[in-house]
Amino acid sequence: MLNLGILVFSLFLALVLFGCTSTPVCGNGACEIEETNSICPQDCGVELSCIDNDVNDASNIYGSYFAAGTAQGYPDTVQGSANDCCMQTSQPGACVNIGPYLSEAFCNESVPSSVMYECPYGCMAGACVSNEVTISKELWKNAEPWGIVDWSKHENILWVVLTNNTDNNLTLKAFIAGDSNYLLPSGGAVLPNSSAGLQFVVSTSCVPNEKYVYTKEDIQIIYDTDSIQNKVEYGVADIVGECLE
Image (cartoon, rainbow, N blue to C red; front, side, top):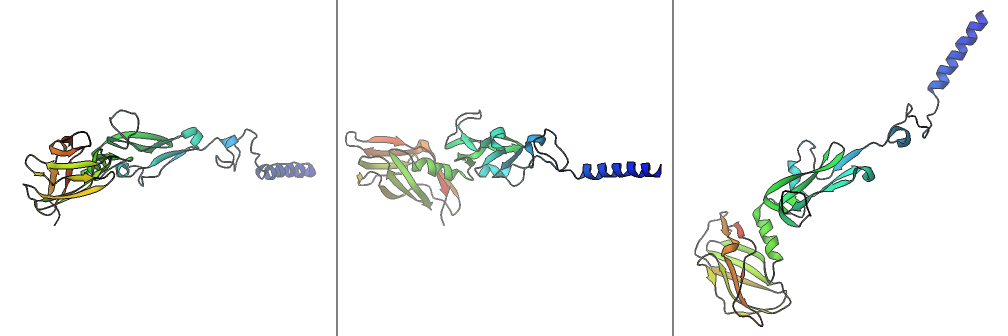
């Protein structure tokens, strides 16, 4: 009787020991002890996750409005991704380089998502800009036929650098900023993709760090082409900034 008890106990002990130390088999359809999503996704399923590369605090995505980024889901074949991009309207649509709205990508737990945000000073290249000067200069830089690559103001002196963004010679006749502030230079050909620096006195003065604005409606560039005289080009954006010291 004693020997039978010892035999039963030995069998029980062997089952416990060998059963607890058996190696899990990945792919047998059972998520066993020591198996996880990362070790054996076949049995335990795929672990879903998401990383937003332009936000440090997942509970506050406001700070990421000013940096372009991507919300990347993992695995990407299941979760996909969402990119920050500028929009012309508050409704989902095609991305643009410059617009008033930002479609901000973020991680909604493990799912890449997006939210629409109206940038105070506009959106450029997938991020809100921190001031209106940035957008204005970007729009002017690429404008045709005349662009402006830079400008500044000191007291009552306005300085602008015009550039001919065409493949043709253009003859500058006048640059008007405001109702009565204008420059009538002697005129001269501005070669294709070349610049001309203009410095002239305006009627309103400013003090250091004071904001000045010449609206795009009040900006005119008068010029001649090879076939048309006194052609008028209006501003594509405001000329805005802070007065220099």
